[in-house]
Length: 196
Image 1 (cartoon, rainbow, N blue to C red):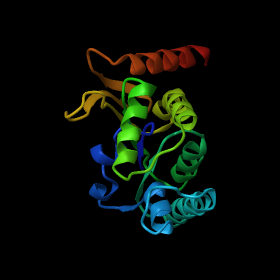
Image 2: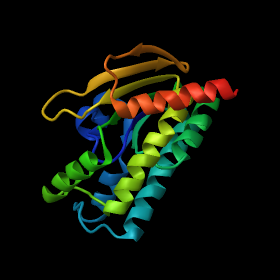
Image 3: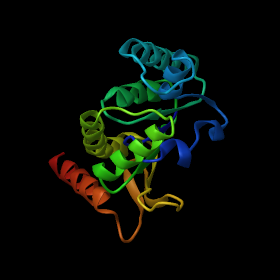
Image 4: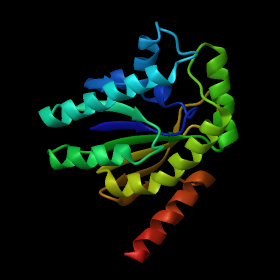
């Protein structure tokens, strides 16, 4: 199970296209656009709901059949972690590539630029909330996934920078300097370890 994760506007699709992993893959935004006549703009709640239903079915089918797959997720909710738990129980190795930028305002600006070019978007409130929820769930991902590679994509026109690599919950590589958004997440991980 491969998950490309991060807040909207972080550059997930550009940095790690699902097709490059050479396994079955599913992108809910692309599915919604297909259902919307190929257009990423003005997608109705009904179409979004159907795309999400297809997304969840895709994951359930692949877990049941033990077939490798790759997906994108914002980590806005805990559903990816529940799916990962089921996948591990069926023998999957859990791998995540997490991509983020330095602030919610930067992510919002990039989503706005994408929308102007005909890409998908959402309300400012939804995007801001998703950014902070995703960041808040990153410590959970680091503890739960077998292998996680975290990238900072703040610098425009540059390759995302690997800033943390973790295996089985243990951090094996930490870049210097660390971006502020990741320092906050690491503090939360440390706090959780001491609470155990």
